[in-house]
Length: 371
Picture (spheres, rainbow, N blue to C red):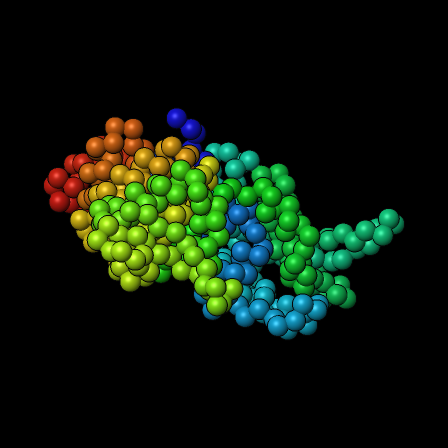
């Protein structure tokens, strides 16, 4: 059996999580807990970890949450724009200190392996020119800010022993390409599902392969009438495409969107899963739109494909039916490496309670509350 990408997890000073330590992870991890306890933040932290602290991804996350508005020009940014980006990035840091304060370093990764840790740290840097003409960034303290004529704000991204500094006035740094080359394969399925552009990209990677059949099997969990499916382009609009499904009872294929939220949700999750080979699959509110009778079959599929394709899955849920189906599927699958992770807020500190597949059977049989 393939080794897990992360055997355990540490998240420090990220969003509302000051310090979270999960001593054991499974291949398929279901994260539960009350609203605002940090479930989605944990997924976001794992997304950053898999992407090696990609500055491009950071800007996308901040923009999607309305925390940053990208400039409309590619020219060097004005000082107020730079400060705006620096302030926006502080939304990622626990406590969100301003320029006159100190934002604590974010740490995401393995509890016991320094080589499997990502850290993010904001700071100010003096730009120094060497004799060779190369410009070097020298870190300076907050109290030294006024001593330098033109210090720049930067984000230091460290992966293991490798450190990269992104100048906030030059976010499209060539260093970005190197980080992307080292990332762990990963796909995030949000609570609202995949966008059509992402569906097109993922389908193109598995079209006419055996993985296409796995997605079809997933849809057959929802309806045994599904024969096959594909993604087609609109010939009248080169930017438009849609997913169509051939049903046994219908002569003509039907748009997937017309077959209900459950069918679309299962399609997105299964398409993402088969594309996440040797990486991470992250799913927020996995039960959204899915009828409770489908959840057991979906978890069986996820457990089997995650093991076969070497995918480590992290999903969140609010649903007791989803938790119970997860437990039943892990009991039936003798090779399952399932872990239920309940996040609790104790005195403003996020604390995990771990329940493996054996303990989960006891919890569900006794109808104990674990959400």
